[in-house]
Image (cartoon, rainbow, N blue to C red):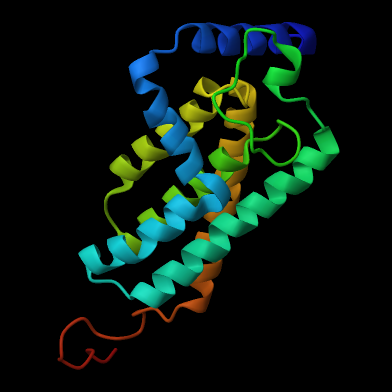
Length: 192
């Protein structure tokens, strides 16, 4: 697909979403968008999920914060590189439901932090990944719904978040002591 055709399709999908808003649900998507600011949703969930799963609360929270803030900073840097205008600056029907965004439109920092948060929390907690992923999808969709991102901004942010989340998992795996080399039971390892 040619870049111009892709951009037109992106704008058409955006326009369709904002033209089909359901007013009683506006507050849900505005709330999801606000909660996802700077990855705070994922940092706030980290200690709660750690307690629920019996994992180290401080470690889980610190690693989650480092991961989502890394994704957010990378997204912010890329916004400066791409400098894509926000939909409400280009599309007359956008009518954003909120406007306190930082930088350009591409990529979505909310999507980046959300996917990075899902990846690292799923790894650290060991469960709940499906629910976390659904929450991340809702946050990403909210950014289109409220009128501040195109769908491709969200997809690019999600890809960035996936890369950052996987890198964070790699770092945690390298830094964390593993049980490799220790027997699973109290019995000594057999010789030979």
